[in-house]
Length: 298
Ligand code: GUN
Image 1 (cartoon, rainbow, N blue to C red):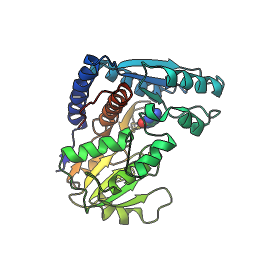
Image 2: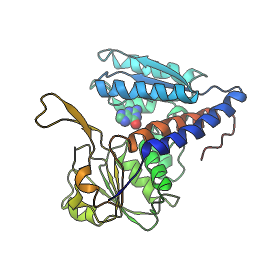
Image 3: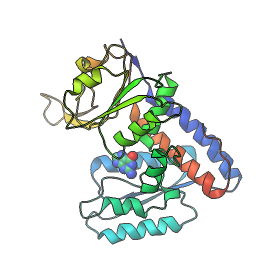
Image 4: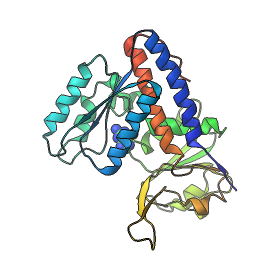
C-alpha cells in the first residue's frame, strides 16, 4: 500500500508558521491584508474564495472581499484593482479565475501591482520565477514543493512528469522542479492533451504531478511501482447509479494507483489545503516587504 501524503497536516504546519509571522508583523504595526475579488460567481469559485477568506481570519490576516456583477463592464474590475493597488491596508490581491468571457484575463493580471500579486501570475513575477529569482511562487506548485519536502521525496536527479500545461499549475510546476534549488534539480517532462504515448512517459517517472483537469485520467497502470503521485485535480462528477449525487475526484484514479504508488496525495485533503496555505504565506511575505518588516518564513 502507498503512503498517503496528508496535505491537511502539512498545511496546518504552514498556517502555524504564518500565524507566528502575522504576530511579528502586528507587533511592528503592520496588519497584513488580503483582498479577494470575485467576478464570475460560479459555485466552485464562490466556495474557494470563501475558504480563502476563512483561512485569513484563522491566522490573523485581514480579509477584504469584493464582488462584482458578472455582467458588469470589464472596466469596473480594472478600477477595483486600481483602488486595491493604492490601499496601504491591502498587501495582497487575488482575482479569482476564471473571469467572465468579456473580461481580458491578461489585462487583469497585468493590472495588479506586481508586489501585491500573491498568485504570482503577473508577467513580471512569471519572468522572475523562470529566471530563478521568484518573488511569489504560485500557490499550488509551491504547496506541492512543500509536500515533497515534508515527505522526503528526493527530486534532485529524479525524472518528474507534469501532466498539464496551465499557467496556474503545469508551467510553474515544471519550472520549479527544474530549478537549481531545493525540491528542484529534476529532469522534467511536461505532457498535455496533445502528448502521444502518455503512459510511456508517466511510467518512467519517479514523480508524477497530475494537473490536466480530467477526472481520473491517470490510473495505476500508468505509473511506476513506488513513484510519488501528486494529484492536483478537483473534479466534481456524478456518482454512477446515484441520480444527481456528486463526488469530488482527482485527476488520478486513486483506487487503482494507491497500490502502485510509493506515496500519493488524496482528493480532497492533498494539494487543495496546501494551495490555500501558500496564499497566506505569500500574503505575509508581501506584507513584510511592503511594511519593511523582516519575517522568517520557512
Ligand atoms: N482559480 C483556480 N485556482 C486559482 C488560483 O490559484 N488563483 C486564482 N486567482 N484563481 C484560481
